[in-house]
Image (cartoon, rainbow, N blue to C red; front, side, top):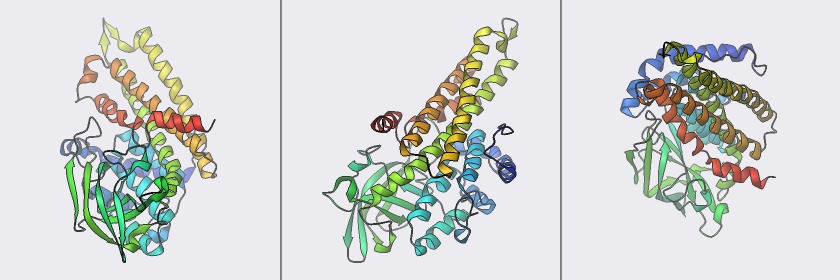
Length: 380
């Protein structure tokens, strides 16, 4: 388990939440992880369990079904879920979908959509990526045409996490054709709306338990009051939330990297080669020592970034740096941990193989590492 005994950013309330999370994961997640991997989807009932515990909306105000806490409590849950190998689908609901509704939603939208997402009776997704628009959101081609008191949506999305399960989707659509990024809006679409269809559950390299889908919109008509935030102001909303999203990815990356290190260290002490534990070879100890140092630096930086975010001072370039460094570090750790397992590391029955598979996309979603460097570079 994660050692948080020397981390000054967390107090007794955080530790109590962490213990609750560990008990919930042990009872309701760990026994089902392999089945979720095999099925390619997390049980809807798990969202309900998390919702009942308050884990889907720690920072959501109490009047909308949350706990009314700050982001540090979300970070505690993100660390524990990532360390335990629980798929990001649940975290996406609390760390991405709900913040958009709370930060930009009307009172009616918060009560209609945020409350069931916070209590786990509904599942949410955010539909940004398209076949021709990934990190470059200004290239979005899905349209939302105003027609009286409705928007009519046409287009398609891909790589959408929670795509199969989602009841409530925040769709990034173009509401003005000639304004580039300033012509995008966020529109809420409910599952079951006529004209909306789901494609296949995509076959991915890793994160098998996460339902990741194609979504199609053909003359999907939704009420104008489903506009989230200002019309043609979607790009600004997206940029504002990216700081939190990228910090959240960094939190999960750090915890997953720690898990991979712990798994690798344990294996080298248990596995023997040439008559002695693998750990006793100098190359093994040096490899692990290097990783331990990176993890030590990573935890210190992560705590700094969380404190800075809580104070309202984490800049977009700093969030991009955090996302870049922690996900790249995660990859180095999981790859080395797999190497230390030898041939066993390449077998899917070993945990390190899943940790390795799941880590690869961390350097892609939320903005690729190359985009992170571009953002950081522009701020120099």
